[in-house]
Image (cartoon, rainbow, N blue to C red; front, side, top):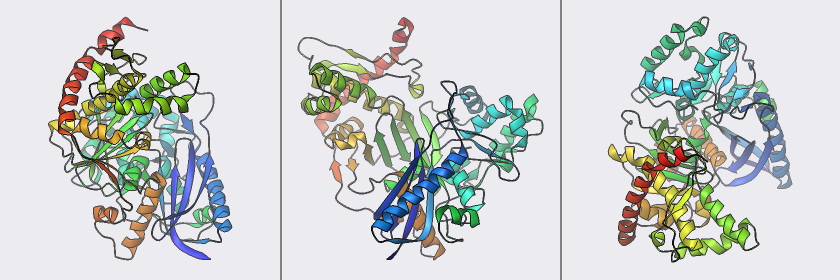
Length: 516
């Protein structure tokens, strides 16, 4: 039985997934395949072979088709959406041939170039931005740099291999080079400044202007190409099937959470923590804790990222689990109820959750997590665990202060990630930020589902029926969300605890000076 619908492709750091939905975006089946990092590299080096992504895509499609076949479904794909890990550096020559392994978002070799570009361009350029990787390549691999004719991201590379076009969604493009909100294209003035920096150095000879290398920027609904012969063979779909502009995982996650209105903040708590806020205007200046990219429709996104997410909380929970002779699951079953019933001030305890460094807060050394204020009355598992969780939420609020200083709206927080598995913790987040928190009942399918939303929007645009992007996202809300509103008394207590936490973080440098 033929079923019309949409194909979503998500190329993550550890593997690739594909999903097929019906016209209403209900997932009918999913396929998966994995790949590995290039072995034998130094500890801060992370590379993958672009050919491995393509092989994984073919394998995932075979997996998907087998599952659909078992359901008696033959997919009739109306459009394709692609998303992938942002900030990678995929280089190709004039003939579109890969020039070797791609350096990924987590590759740490170009931190100095990120700082240099931030100072030179006057715009926050984190070390993972693709242009900082490119500056490193020019200086350290000039033979590769002079042969480079095209540069893109993992999602952009897959889109090229499927369509033959060097195009990229504006959100993923913003992770390559800063976007001018006036033109919704790469910032022309900063491009000229970047090229001047490159050609002032010895390694710049023979390197093409950056604009000539970057993929063309496209917004949601615009042309992302269509399947050529190679792409059609790889996916087993007809030549000419439309493709939405390939996007990064963060814009796709925002799409999958149906977030498109300024003032809505997506917060995901897991091993790391990400808060993406849709802005109503560009951010002014540079803030250490705030990165910038774009939503698929071009709206500015301000991102606060914490390396130290729920790791410290998990360590505390597992410690109590081991003490009782159990494992991690036993620890959570025992400790989380105690955390939920612990007093708002954690019995006077405060915590630092820095199991690792925290660049956005100026913490350069990890392994300094600690509990402060322990005595015989408050030494309870619930107090300790709650103090660690609150410390992470406080760090996110601390990183968000530059947005507050510029009066960016925070009307609603949409919570996802591991923390959402215990919905009652949404109340704690609402009280910390003094803002309503929502946990969606639908849209939990992640970035691949976000890719299918972008595919549907492209199909609507081709038919001349695409509504406003934010209205389109809102029309796909389903189920009954769980909502939490701030409690005035608790907000006051936690405001006092937050002030104490800020002082504690300010003293962290003294802990670093003590050493391990």
